[in-house]
Image 1 (cartoon, rainbow, N blue to C red):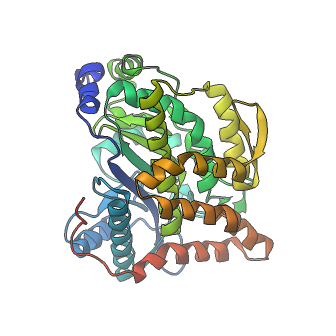
Image 2 (image 1 turned 135 degrees about the horizontal axis):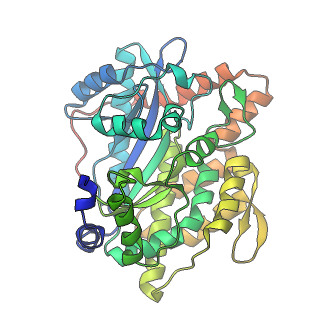
Length: 397
């Protein structure tokens, strides 16, 4: 029997949430490692990790599935401003480490032209198991995301928040869409990443409604006992109750080339969790929609992004995606003000007014730029963080 089955999800993992803390914050960003001249993906993770960790003065870089991908994670913070500054310093150090090796970085949902056949897998036991299990699905998954962790105290409360937040996932996907090009062509999608990753991986996409911790724990325990998953990281939903950190991990967003855009999306995510938390604590319940309805909005979000229309699932009417996002900003304003997130909500409004990454890239295409030229512009946005001074140690939480 595998190690995962020795963990009793209902008791052992539930206790992590019951002893947890509300509204702690952690942010994860994934980057393409690129050759400095061609901007093709480069299998240089080990070199970049060594340089980045050395520059930062402590571990900076985390490996992902392929050697041409790198991830940076903030520490655990009690304020968003601390998490924001932590990520700024980490991005800056990572960019400068890449430059020192003749490499560069990009943070969009997919690389627009590199071939998956040219990417090598990272040599860790965990990811080697993933590759062995998933085969072609893992081979072709060259995708890059933005993940936000928000602490929630109480196991039943965490599931209630997750059940309700499911309906908001397509809105965040539309807002964050950054991947309209793939395999050298325009795909007709604003988030190609969402199609490549969410529709390919098992236990991915919009989770079911579980109602309480016991309902969720029964399913997770089934996965472990039946050896469907070795551990909870193989539950790849776009929102999940994280078994180690006692957080809601919201995983729906495309990676963002602009650090300011990334923090805007992350800040809105935190504000929405806090908003639902306030409602649940006041009333003991939250609105929940069946997955089949949310899936229609998920498709609309990845297809049309902020240019498209989303469905108000309560009123059963279509609305412009930008209008839906603005309504959420208004709903979350009180919670955002309490958490000092006004700057982040202003950043969301800037995205709605001037366009998110997918819209900007598609406008460039309409202006006659090639996909290669557009990719260079996204690399420049990503590397702009390198102008900031690096730090020798992590920001205190």
